[in-house]
Image 1 (cartoon, rainbow, N blue to C red):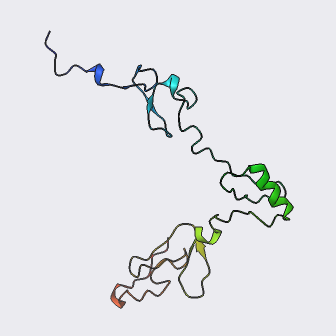
Image 2 (cartoon, helix red, strand yellow):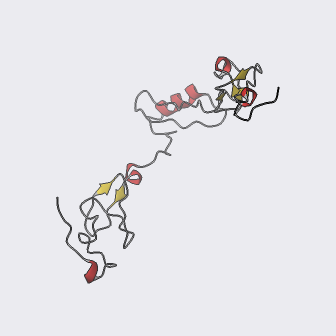
Image 3 (tube, helix red, strand yellow):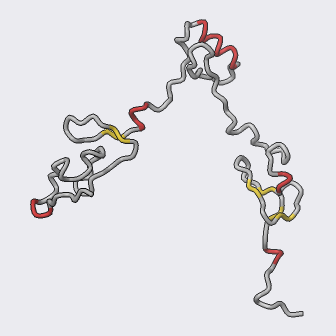
Length: 155
């Protein structure tokens, strides 16, 4: 029988599980080993993922000061926390946390100290401003000619 061009080729749908070779119409891709698996083997343990431990890093924190403890290669986590506590919670503190100020965008209008979570850039001068100074009239934009300066309609 000749194949009709409108018939669906079911053999082209889905992928074979990398573990059991079963054809699965809705396969899962492991984020750690990038292999394709059926629903039964989508779990890292079920398909014996060689990268199971990758990405499951838990940083130890001090039970006294709640600081994140710096881990050195090959050192025992408990030993590192104990050394931190013995030092009076001064040593072995991880300092790679982003500073709060780097998360916010400061207004460049003179003497304004307002910070915004989302940057608001002027399309004329390309500087960053807060909500209050976002319009070119409000920050006295130098890249706007007198003819284009119009009052903003307030609704």
